[in-house]
Length: 328
Image (cartoon, rainbow, N blue to C red; front, side, top):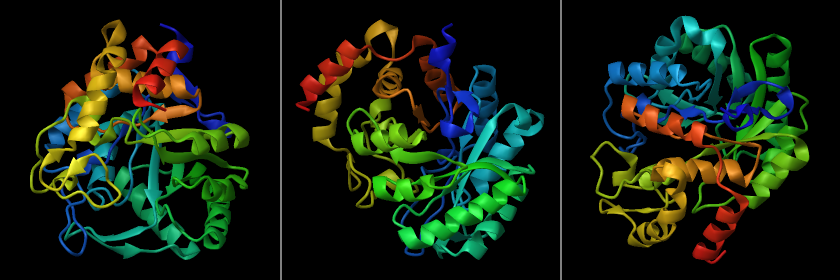
């Protein structure tokens, strides 16, 4: 197996990770905002989640990305339990900035104060059952840049204390990403990226500032994994907020998105890939700084996603063909 296609360096940190990470939003289970809007992906089986994480470890996945607010703390607890004695063999990323009621599984607000960073980290370490986080990320995509500079400095203090190895910002704004990147231990920007939603400016920032681009929504919230129908009541895709494209309210996948995916199917499924594996292969071909983090809820999904690594990235010719098909 080509080592270069199965591992990546996490930006300027020098931390080595598998080229594929696993995103742990879905395994947090059901949670909601104060109005009752679902924020999870529906019900989950915690035992299956644990089995899926452990299967991912078997298959060479060494990077797991979660957030304190996923499932109002539940995702961190499940991930910590699943990793167990393997904690030091993997790179764990989590996020802060949202405030939630763990008991009611409800998002209650945000807190961008420097004082909150430490409180949030202390709680995350407890739920994860660890003494440090490898990558700590600001979860407020549109936080004020001046305040973000203070949060960056607070993260540097956490690095100096050994509580955090590196940090980053989950934002789709290149200018905001650059503010965090002024800190010597900032090593990543987390941005939305998939074959239907390119992010050239963010990828350029990553290249210019020596950051990893950790890619959320690499499978377009399941559409590039083949999801077409409606979703359950506790699933965010059943009542998609304005920032979540590709799904009609309660009606399943947007027909226009489905048509675009079908136009790409032959290219993405080349080389014996599944549709999802082809979507991940596009991301790897797009930039050597990318680390996609598809979600998962089952051992079968873990196996399919991890299987993409052995097949490697698409070719430059296939990238060009996809741009032609999409009229880019």
